[in-house]
Amino acid sequence: MSAEPDTHTDGTPHGASKLQHPPGAPDGSVVLPLPPNVPRVKPSRLARWLGRAILRLGGWRMVGQLPDIPRAVLIGIPHSSNWDGVWAFAAKAAMGLNVNIIAKESLFKVPVVGFMLRRFGVIPINRNAAHGVIDQAVAMIKGAEKFWLGIAPEGTRKRVEKWKAGFWKIAKNADVPVVLAYFHYPDKVIGIGPAFHLGEDMDADMRRIREYCRPFIGKNRGTV
Image 1 (cartoon, rainbow, N blue to C red):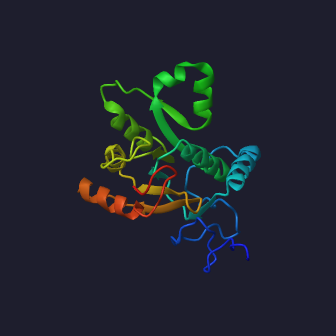
Image 2 (cartoon, rainbow, N blue to C red; image 1 turned 45 degrees about the horizontal axis):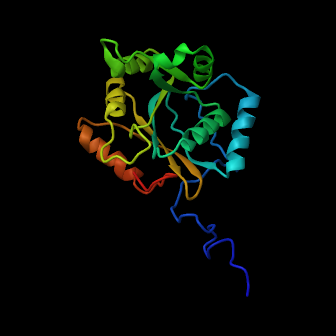
């Protein structure tokens, strides 16, 4: 009896989905090229090599296209595992893309932890400040020539029926688009784009973005 083939008749590997993803990098790289106006980190060959190596070892690749915009809110969907952070930081390092994440400032009081968080682009924020987390985040974006803020709209690794609205409020008040970054574990794909330009109806925008994300499957649960 012959062994079962490694791929389906259409060429997709067994265990992979048949979701049609946008193309990846033109040169066949596992990561996408950066357009000229996005924020970049200080060039580091070691960091980029390490990021690419981690993605290759894990079997991951990137697809889509980074929008050529200097300021944005980047949302990661779906967030169901700590592994999401591993692949996200590997992709970020491999591209040299500067995406900042906010975290409570108490985490930075431990010297080694604070140093490492800053190295990974995490910024301390005072959750008890009178002007609030959203206003602080908006000020960060508006105060920089180039600034991408990364947020997980689900706010937890568990499945939620309703996303937290913070990312929408930050993007709306900062007058920047929302850029999607998605994980699709069956195909080990990290997708980037499109950029969603927000309207005046928050609920309608949230439904539109969530509907776009519905086909994507996380590590520990189904779609968003």
